[in-house]
Figure 1 (cartoon, rainbow, N blue to C red):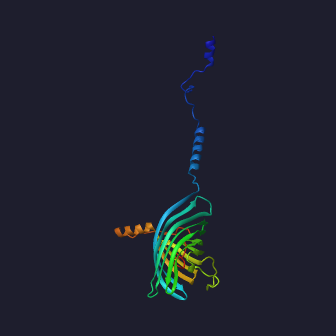
Figure 2 (figure 1 turned 30 degrees about the vertical axis):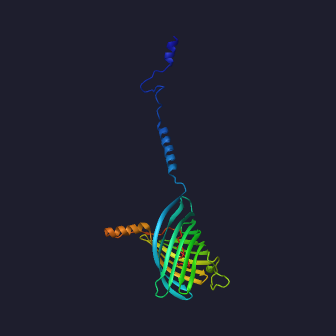
Figure 3 (figure 1 turned 90 degrees about the horizontal axis):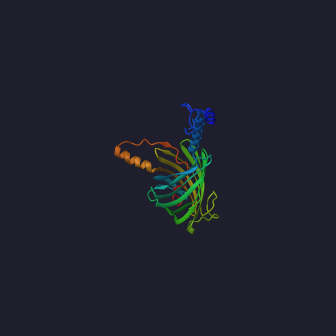
Length: 289
């Protein structure tokens, strides 16, 4: 009797009812919820975190400049270039930090007969600062070695350090910049006597530079026009300069085009946006920032 009662109370397993050992069926609701959770986790995993990005570069270049000292003007040419690491902090709200560390060298010689102008400038510096949508600021130390001879004016070889502070603004395909740069030098004869120097503009340090310019990139070639006013122990030195620099990638493009006979199309850009400014005139402004 007991067995019969238990038999009646125990349901008989059918083909449509799972046994205790079989897996429970998953409802459509559970499947939808499970997929939603997985999708949410996947979406969260794709979110990029703030981080630093960097890129090595090499830019050989050269240019021409009109140099004025003591009312006498001459034209000079310069050859050189720079190499370094540009970096920026990405995936963050404005302002974003960006900058670069670079080494640069420029050799300058007179293009005018009898001018006896020659100079050398070697630099190593790091510059960084915040950038908004169209405006940015950068500053940093710039160590240098330079010398400059121009007719009877001679700025003796010296080691030194500058602290350029520049503001740059992006205007469509062109970047404009302006800044100041105090310098401190090792050679005593290069140090300005601010009580006696004949300059309408003030300054601090052993030398002081005011500069402004405009730059843009066309087909991988960076074109730069700049005016600088540098106060030195020999008096104010004014320089108007036009220069061009070519990126390493473009150099290889030009070599390949010479082999294939096809000119590279290139691209028109806005430059690195890193506020790469400075003066190329040796002894009266140093290398590019």
